[in-house]
View 1 (cartoon, rainbow, N blue to C red):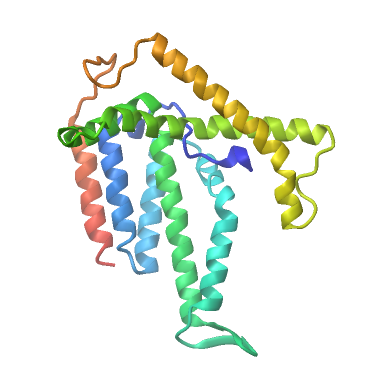
View 2 (view 1 turned 60 degrees about the vertical axis):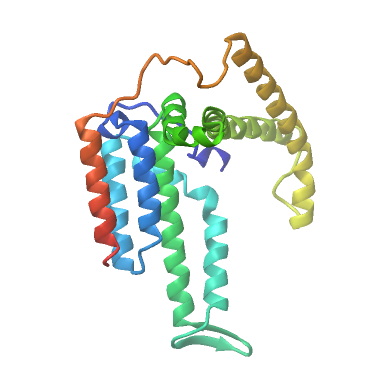
Length: 263
């Protein structure tokens, strides 16, 4: 389950999506998130999902790999669906028993929210899957650079955000190794009630936190030894550069966002 989380992972491919400028991909992701929350019909969601599928195919990343990123959120999705089905009232009564009832508005809203969560996770995962951590840092720093005039440390913020994303798969891999090692010694993380299962995670969390602090210390020493001082006077091996296909992609996304808002 831990290995199924795709946010923060990067898969190198020779594709059109990978070749896009990191700044354009960040802007595209932002536009798509805004557009996603303006959709109020399943027709719009279907159109949006078809577009995301096309992007996955163009990225040359396995559809199975992208869809595996949905597995860790299934509990959240089922909980959201359950809450809406039983608590949202309105429309035709589909089933009732004493004070409990399921109405059509609750079913519609529940599946509507589930579709939104699935699509949101899919295309936000594509941002990190197709953008290297270095490009992502440079892209975020460029977008936040106007805030430097107001004293906002754009370079430090972009670096922290990228490191946080990059360490997600690393810490998950570390947690998976610790869990397997403890299971080999007889630890049980799956049986018992909720409280017992929560207590069984304590032997997992303690070494995981120690490992995270050790990795953070090693990273800080590595950055200090390389004289990293943020964005001031910093040069880059590969400078970000807008190309014609970046603007074409941005225009296509804007047209898509406007089109789905009318569904």
